[in-house]
Length: 205
Length: 205
Picture (tube, each protein chain N blue to C red):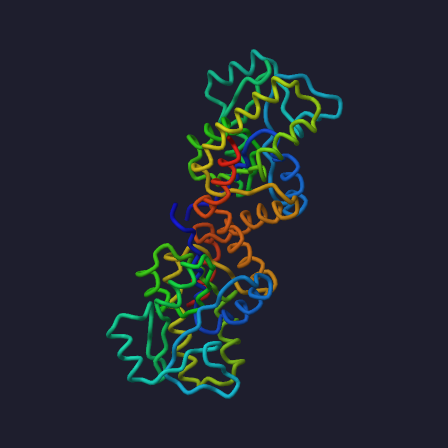
């Protein structure tokens, strides 16, 4: 019998929608989820830990990895490279762990190419106004960057149809409950229940 | 734009597995679910209400309904006819209500023919021994009937692969939580989110 494989959950959606906050809350409720740690060429901030927040590597190594096709997805953002290693995902799934990728819409498109069996969850703001408010609230954005992000968000929304689920991040508690429900229900799928079926049939003689 | 349609959830599984208890607990947690009331030719018990527990009709009318193709599923059980009207299901779905059918495995097979878009949930006992204990615990079964039910259960288990989800009724709370998660996550499916998508796009100009 083939070994059981973990689920790959992809959390994506426009920038500013609150993916990170939702993901952290969800991990408190479902602690056996694995988080996919990304690789980056930017310098670590002081609170960041190697292997926990990111794997920090230099640009030359990153480009070697690209050539060697080691990335499930990668992008250059604000001058820094960032990506997810195939090995990070494959190891978790092979060990029957459920893994969560928190990723932008472009990255999710790349992941879909390599992992079409992934469970793709699109996280959306309750309204455009609210998204704008949230991006302004960060106060780290210049006005031009903010406009660019809002324009990108509109294009990204058109990708929604390629996803499996949509969660509206209106009330945090409700959105987290919906994400948890998706995790729990995907674990109940017949194709994930080989062990239960085998056990019940083995008891039948 | 086409109107939104409710989801049809089919709870099925071997006799004695606890479908009814689970369904009642679930309805306390998700009160906006509709329960599909069956039609039967047996006489009402004293606590049973017309239109709430069953629609009670005579055998001649039942047979007329069969000829007129009015049933989504029907069967003759212990000398009495029992069935689900197509109109009961279609009305609920057209009004955008989510409906739950609690039904035996044979009935679920008939429902799948007519409603392939239904969400089929197979409820299983934690073990064969436990199923036997539960059936014996009812004390309403003769030994021969009980043996027959256990044999049927083994055949019915082979149907599991045609279902979407499997829920093991080991701990009641956990099984109900899984059923609820399936309801909540199915409501988050992209194809059920037309209104959300439309609203967000309408706000974009």
